[in-house]
Length: 253
Image (cartoon, rainbow, N blue to C red; front, side, top):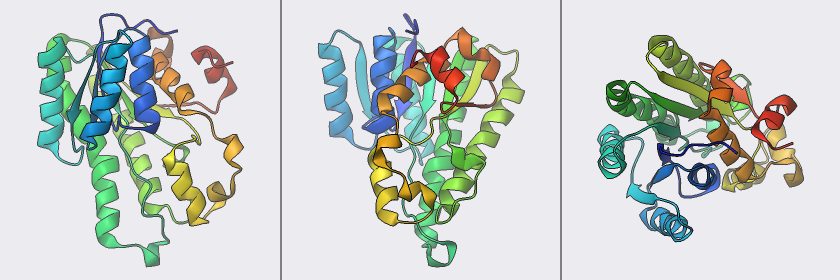
């Protein structure tokens, strides 16, 4: 298991799925965690459960599409625990799934605000704190959609391609600063997102048997591993959790 004792982590989209699993895994690895999401009650309850288990956890409502909201979450994390050592940019949406000619421009725009600008906001708001510390790790949740064209997913494929490019640029700019930027492409995960994908009936992903999806806990463990020195060789790119060797290094095999 990763050892993150003494570290503080902020996780966006922490109310469910991968975000909630990341909060649990990072807490079990010894990190103090701040859960950020629009669902204030849900993250507050999850933070309380982690506290009851003996971990250090807090929650703060946050809309990643709004920079001031993300910046406030960063300040809250630093003020509460003294540092921001890890940021997990996880918040993202798959809705609305639609072919381009059927897509709603306002909904498409909102997906980009969350999936792309939300990650940029997380990186941008973390940098002043991490640069002052001289250290930090930023994990951007990516997808195989970053390099694939999938019908009905124009918003999602475009947004994840942008996140991969942002990871690469940030790594290039920050190399040698003590700040790591790494992407994680989990593959298909058994979350509410898969329910929406299945219901759409569009593209081959919607036809997958639910049994092939990995549990969110696997991704949570992979995120914790990404924050260790063992993952440094992948900085500036996406770690692909579908890779058997990566699963072995994470401890899933």
